[in-house]
Length: 299
Image 1 (cartoon, helix red, strand yellow):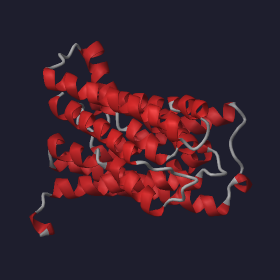
Image 2 (cartoon, rainbow, N blue to C red):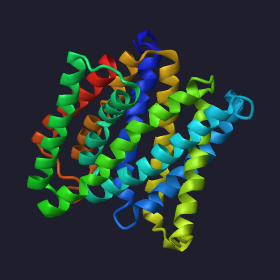
Image 3 (cartoon, rainbow, N blue to C red):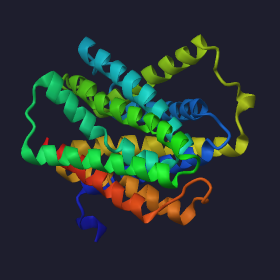
Image 4 (cartoon, rainbow, N blue to C red):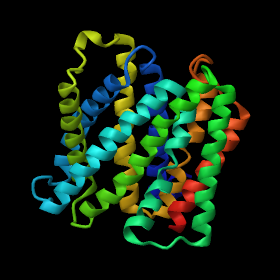
């Protein structure tokens, strides 16, 4: 049966699973550790895993123009560095089951940017999809305040982190598309994004004199952070490979199912003191997923 499924759909499913596993690994890896430590480890794993793959299947030194290089450097700083920093902090504060659905709203922010900057027109289905995302996030915000892990006020305030992550993730592909338009391959683009994000984040921490020492890492949590890096790398390669061999209409709905996977896996395997799952949260997440898929397909 597997052989009859489109390869793009299979790759997208692998990408969705990678996203879900990453979120839960970050949750377990940041109980005591800081989200900055998590981001450094994930970026390091990305570099170690992506570098040989990129040079084996692409030609990073020959594929870039000045325009594409600047585009992918910018995408790396905006999404891979800043977007992940906010997203990981959101997971640490309010959990993966709430941060992941909010992060999935990124197509809304990309669409709004395209309307404002590129003058794109919003169609009826597009508007309804955007409205679904807004309603879903509003309901998740309310549910978090009512049924969160800490006080309602603290949980509601912490929602700014995954929301900011979603905004930055939404901006990233708009910038990256400038690089793809120059003919740069996905693997080469991913490598430059990761390198620029790593250099930028280390420079930022050095400026703040906040680079964590190796002794600051908790060994048990470090294993979870390495696993998060491997899961994230799996998602990146699978997602971009799926887009190269299939269509957005096939790939995006499958990848956007990752919040539901997070909720299911959290309910089955994660301790209640780390993730508190409710039926309402699952229903509200469906609003965001449906809206995100609609914005992408009808955009």
